[in-house]
Image 1 (cartoon, rainbow, N blue to C red):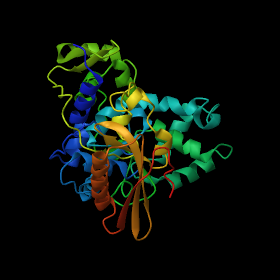
Image 2 (image 1 turned 30 degrees about the vertical axis):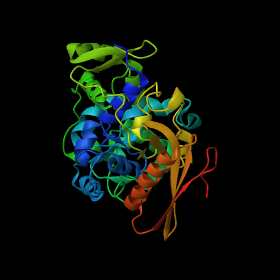
Image 3 (image 1 turned 180 degrees about the horizontal axis):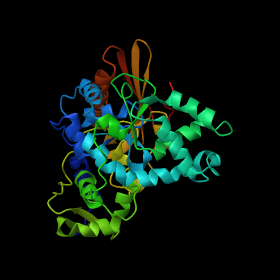
Image 4 (image 1 turned 120 degrees about the vertical axis):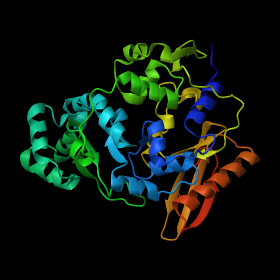
Length: 370
């Protein structure tokens, strides 16, 4: 059976809970989506606000503090907000790939080339024991141990080599504290689980992002050995083809969504996994163009209209005001502008309820800078 781009779009939006906000808790959504992108502090809150009904950001703060939610480096070597079981069972899959990164020539202009990885790791293990430590303190120790190397690169190497996570206050609502790191096992009081099958992880990916190709799965996870793991799923998956004849895998009991189902406007956070978890992004980005990562590095975020990326936005704040500026990718209809303005107003009421809001829709090609 061949699936159109629009079927893939609506199915993805339904599985991401972007067609209708769902009555889910933060841990429930994190489990379903296999984590929320949390490279910065605000995006997971925006992901939850966009996808769940009556979201209270205090629940994430509470979850980080009672350790029912954690911020940990997982898929694609980026920080994700996940539940403790996922931290313990996904990290062993990701960790071997992370440990390869620091000693490549392309890492920090070769800053670690020539050092013995085992020796560097041993220093990190001796330094970061059972108690959390700030990145600043770890960097200071790195400078003392390796005075002829870039201390920041040594710190980053330890953070790749050791299974670690970020502890509060980093990640709390409206808290921009610098990272404090802990080893995973002492923080969660449980051992890592190296026996969690890769095929189970991929089946969960399909339930949240499918149907998808094996290259889509690899793009999402940055893991290899994807096809053998998919083959092990046997009749738990079914296959389709896309418009280009590529094989798409899906959970056998998962449903496709009506391509004519209306898709409301959504304003997501920067680096949202919706845009980063497929090799072929045509199901959400027209023409399959790369996601606006350069803009995202400046906290620029996507606007979805009719389910597709049709603009970008950024919020600028002062002590008293919050300005949400939007650049369309093309000319919008009056109805689309009205819906975008309504969702933008709701977003500002969520992010900056104590500031005076304003919304500006600029012309295509304009600059977001105020």
